[in-house]
Structures are given as structure tokens and as C-alpha cells.
Amino acid sequence: MPGLFLKGDPMNINDTLRYLDCGLPKEIRKRKDFGDFEGANHFIDLYLQRDDVPQSLKNCLIAQREMMRRTPDNYPYTYEQAMDRIHQEIPDFTEEEFNACIDTGRVHWVYIGGVPHYIDSFFGAMCKDAKIAARAGRKNSPTMMPGTDETFRNYSIKQMKKNGKMGLRMTIRASVRIKDEAFKPGFVRVHLPIPAECETQSDIQIVAMNPAGGKVAPGTSRARTICWEVELKENTEFWVEYSYVHTEWYHDTEHMTPDPWQPSFCTEEQSPHIVFTPYIKRLTAEVTTGCANNLEKARAIYDWITKHVVYSFVPDYILMESIPDSMAHNYTGDCGVYALLFITMCRCAGVPAQWQSGLDAEPFDVGAHDWARFYVAPYGWMYADCSFGAGSERSGNEESRRFYFGNLDPGRMVANNAFHQMFDIEKKHWRYDPYDSQTGEMEYEDRMIDHGEYERHQVMTACEEVF
Image 1: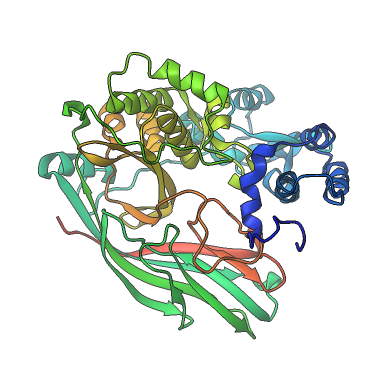
Image 2: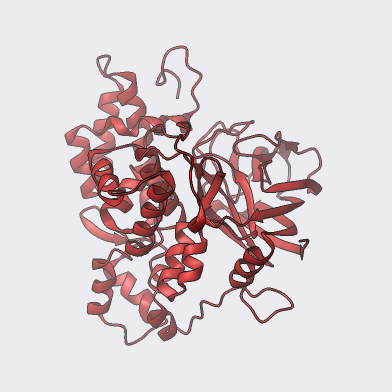
């Protein structure tokens, strides 16, 4: 949008999100919260036309307008439609039971036109409760380690404690394709995440790609992708097959003695999400009271999060104005929200912390996932998967919960080594997820290709334990 960015700043539209902490004028806030998006956008237009409105606030309003545009697709169900959806799988499920799911925060909702609307993934979130899943005939079966009778995670924990490390060589095929009904001939820009260079990944190879000529970002990219910029006459699938070795070393965090001196890098705020609000400061101070060093602080934060927060599917991250603050107040969230709250509280406590994300790549079972890492001298970077830790807490597996403080299993593909990073070849228009990169992005020359207009897949084609 020409003329709406800071003078002399070639800022990408996705970076307007960095200004969300400017906040909304009250006339816009009231309308947005009520779900009167047409009214809110009317006032946004008035503000954007004014010469006396600071550019920073205009950038915030541009971001807020995109957030409101996407909200109805994220929250498509009225209460009656949600109950109809539930009754397709659990005919005797009552309104009282649904209301209880809403009250606990497991089911997210917003007002649209003054009427509550429920998130598209609400039923999957409800089925995180084992009793509800059983009534729906759904089984949350863990991935098994091939050739054994153990789950992959339990096997990994045992092997890493025994041998000090565990490595997997994996081959993954990732793809995106525009749906036929959304396809139009012309220019298309496509990004697919690929493994980034980091201390846990080695022997990264691009095995094959289609179409030929995809541009591979440097291995050190903070959000690494392969990018195609092509003219399409007919619809096609974009895909890349890559192989890599992921190795994780075991950290016995219960028998460590940190150095008296600790570094201060990666302890800063990163607006609009990693922000030390008054509440975050007070919460962090309460949780870490009595901790003697950074390792104890990080463990106290991990323990509090994994023992108090309920896993819940959330809307697209672009819809959330303050991701970690939302979890701190509401006690619900998904893997990325867990990770961001851990990072924010660690940094607030003076513990260096950073984001990592990509794929949970367990043997022949692949899905998007986020986690965190934290630094304690003299041991260096260690890991915290609060989502897996909370899941272990729910299932009563205390050994597993403790393991995921300081450690990860080797079933990972790291594509991103920081949060809210630009691509080397950036999209011109809005990204589906401006903060993270896990399953692919697409755009035409004149507009973004919306999430529902293309398909994405990740399939593991080979996996072997190498040590």
C-alpha cells in the first residue's frame, strides 16, 4: 500500500505487525471486540487518511484490518452449528458439556456481529480430552518406534539417557498445490520450508525438486526455504524432497551446576509478542521466587507452564495481538503459544531464550511443531518443549515431562531459528503465517493466496536410526 509506511523504509507489509502494541483507538477497539468489522474498518479508513496520525499507528491499523479480514474464516461456527458438528460424532453430547469446554478455555470463540462464533478446530481441541475422544471413537495413538514395542518418545528418552545422544537420518517430501478452483494462469511465488543449519542438523541435502530451478536459501537463514518464482500456464504441484541427520544430545539438567556468570544475549523484548508487560513481570517474579540461578529459573518457569496450562487449538497466530500474554491470562494455547510464553518469561527473568520450529518428524509421522531453547553457561543451548511436557503431565508420565526440560527427541526438522523472520526472497503480499514458517506459502503477483486456496503435505519417505 503506497504511502502507508515509514518514509524511506522499504518495509514489507508483514512487518506492520511489529506495531500492534500501539493499540487501537477506542472507537475501533469497541467495534472490533463486538465483531462489527465493517464499522471498525470505516474508522480505520478515516485514521489512515489523516495527516496528524503517526505512521506507527497507521501501520498498526493496517495489520489490524488484515486480522479482522481473516477472523470469520477462523471462527465459522455459531453455537447451534457447533452443537450440530458435535452431534455428528457424539449424538448424546449435551449443551452443558459443551459449555464446560468453553468455560475451561479449551474452545476458543469471538464475537462476529455481536454473536459468539467458535473456532474451526474446536472439536479437535475438545478431543484432546481422552474421555471426549473415546466417545467420538477417536484414538490418540502415539507413534511407535519401528522394530520395537515402544513409543518413539519413550524409546528416544531411554536411548539418549543410555548413550548420551540419538540421531535419525530422515528423508521428507514437502509439497504445496493451488486448489483447482482457485487456480489462475500467471505469475506465482512459492515458499517451502527446508532444514536450516544448526548444531543439531547435519548432512542436509536437497534430493529433488519440482519444478526445477527453485532457489535454495543459505543454510544460515533464520527462516530457511526453497523459493520458486514462475509463470504457470496450468496448475502444478510444487515439491521438494530433502534428507538430513538430526542429532540430539542428552542433558542431565538435574545434576548441573551453572557458572556464577551468565550471558545476557537473547534477553531483550521483541515487540509485539515477546514483551515484558506488568503482568508478565509479576508472574515471572512469583514463579521464580527463591531460584538461585538461571537453570533453576528456567526449570521453575517450565514446571509452572506444563502443570497449569491446558492444550488448546488457537486461531492463526496473525489474529492474536499478544500471544504469550494470552496464555498467561487464559491458561490455554498450542505448542507455539507454550514456546512463546516460556521464552518471554525466561527473558524477563534474565535467562537467554530463543525460538525454534519446523516439524515434529517422528518416524513416518510428520506435523508442524514449535519449541524453545534456553542458554545456561557453561552448558550452552538446551531445549524446552513445554507442549510435550504438558502432554506428559496429562498422561502422568513424569519421566517424560522432566526429559523435555533441557532435551528434545531427535524427531525434529528445524527450519526456523527465530520468531517472526523475513524470507530471503520475501513475499510481496501478506503471508499466511507472518511469524512462523512450517508448511508453505504461496502468492500471485497481485495478491496472497489464502490458506484455504491451496493444499500442503509433508510425508516422511525414509527414516533410520544412525546412532
